[in-house]
Length: 374
Image (tube, rainbow, N blue to C red):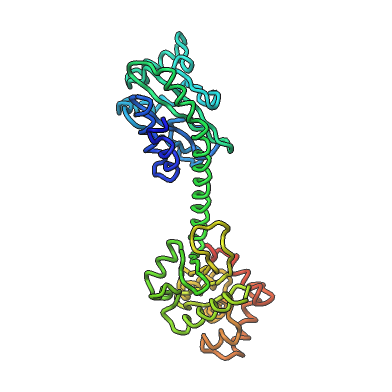
């Protein structure tokens, strides 16, 4: 069995898509089977039996097979109703023990006889060996081999049983990897919904990695750019200089995050955060993370929404938006082309209408309102 390359295929199969395709093919050949499969759920729990595909990710079943498959008619029949009638005691199997078909389906029991005649025999699964393997977190996998004629011998059973100590750690590695992938997928979706992107940078400001949104921003090059040397830059010289100064400061001694306004229309800002290297990371250690936030609405749209939400006049809504984006009264007045005195007057009206006791309150009200998910 070792000479057949099963161990190498088992290790390599953890990162394959689908997992263990090569291992299952080698397993079938090594056992002299007409058909072989590995079936498991990436997550413990879930109500669907092996072979059924539910929509709920924790119940998702991965089924990798090699060799003679069920005829299409019987495969469709199993998906429709056969899996509900499946009498095989999958979870009752002693972990690591190899079972023959007579131990799984009792002759003379109507439901068992019907299943054998209706589902297994037409598919050429007259002889069968099955073994359940469980990894520490509770995920089980079932290894199955079948033949139409000629039973498996003692040597094949021992060879299959001998794989259990090797399959357990491989299954555990895949389950851990799948959990990490799921967590990253959920976190990525949450960040995406909040219109955030991220980039990791080294101490010189070179981009090491990015998510899909960050890659798109760099590819567009309208605001952020990656220079010929790989360093993060910007289309605007002023913004590029601010980014360079922030990176230099964080690379030296600064530990506090640095916020930079990248664009005011459409609104785009960035937070540079120092970050220590991940222990044992294979990639170059990143020195900082750049979180980029975009407002998917134009300033005019946001002003209209603020006016509707807090009953503000257009001039008040424009100032409220500027203050909510972190500008001081003086900065907002200059940006809007009004005097500081007028801005102070408008701000008092804004605070009265929104109930805010100051700019910090106003920022909180705006960002905790429905505008945050608009």
